Amino acid sequence: MNRPVHWGIVGGGLLGMTLAWDLARGGDRVSLFEAGSEPGGLASAWRIGDVTWDRHYHVTLASDTSLRRLLSELGLEHGMQWRTASTGFYFGGRLYPFSGALDFARFPLLTPLQKLRFGLGIRRAANLTSPKEIESLTVEEWLTRISGRDVFEKMWRPLLRAKLGDDYRTTSATFIWATIRRMFAARRSGLKKERFGYLPGGYSAMLTAYWNALKNAGVQVHVNAAVQEITASGGQTEIRFAGGGVRQFDRVIVTAPGPIAARLCPQLSAEEAHSLRSVEYLGIVCVSLLLSHPLSRFYITNISDASVPLTGVIEMSALVDREMFHGHSLVYLPRYARPDDPVFQKTDSEISAEFIAALRKLHPGVEDQHILACRVSRAAHVFPRPVATRAGRDLPPVDTSVPGIHLLNSAHIEYGTLNVNETVQLARKHTWRLHELARRDRQPADAARLHVVARS
Image (cartoon, rainbow, N blue to C red; front, top):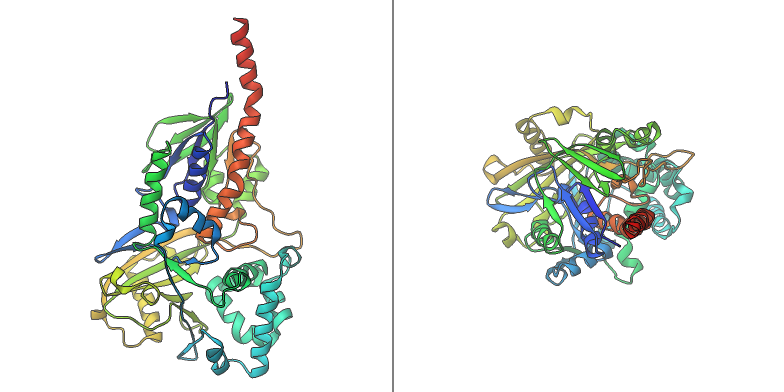
């Protein structure tokens, strides 16, 4: 009989979209459900002032091969614009360039010997091929080992605290290893400097093309389709929707964050539910500003100053042609925080006032009339923080104990950082296996049905 498997995919972010795309092209039937009003999840776009661009900051590296392959499949890769980017570093009330060898030589935070140890530590981290040996170490233990205590205290600790807060103390060394490896991938491929790329129109252009490609591939796409519960019985998996209605599928893949997936799937074992709820997430609060003029020439400004409560400053218009922003400058002010952090309970006006005040410590010349538009985005479950444990990472199951229900989300990125390339790579790591698993497991049932038909 060999009828196609019918999949339901819960979550219309890039992970769910890529699963749907590959399964449909493999001959399966796919229905994709997104709770929001548009696709993309964390990669979605919005309008700020008279500009439509990404809700959160994203960039494509020349070494992001999985994402670039997807863009090629969508007919978009040829339109990528490639640039080199400058980096700044803020500490002690001053902003310093931090992009090349000369900047590094002049950088006053470290002594010459400490600069040597910092550089050697970076090289050692970039050359480490097996992160298994460091996953039980904290970032502090490992970075101190390869760079020295003084370098850690002066350079690494402030950066880690800006990104992770006090949670850096228990974060696995694989976190910083993955970050360094991604940024140095170009050098491993022979390029002298990493190139940064963007699509004209931002990820909005990609998501529109992807959504249309999914429909053309036969995927049934649904927005405003919040899911209430997912259960399985009698060889069928059932999705019950918050707005009413029930749909049945052969199999369902849930791409929601761990705690949400545990709530949606009540038939999971106690161990599985505990594993999902135990994933330690950091969320993000991000203020987007459309400014009348640029702040600096730096795409990224790292912050090594506890008095500035931001993870960094990302100025997209230092990388993207300002024509994309009608001559203006687009700036992101992110802060990562635990889902229970009080910042998530603040109003947009409170957050924007606090974050703009922090920005003015770096750039005192920013006045109210320079701010053309301001929007606040928040997401409580963004980055699954790898925790250093002597037993290693305990990843949630992809194939659950409930027949027909699979779980796949960013917590399954075992040795990487959360970015679009890793998300696409994660989907493609599992799609073909799930496709084959579903077909193999259904063969006995199909054979039994064929036998009954033959006898009748």
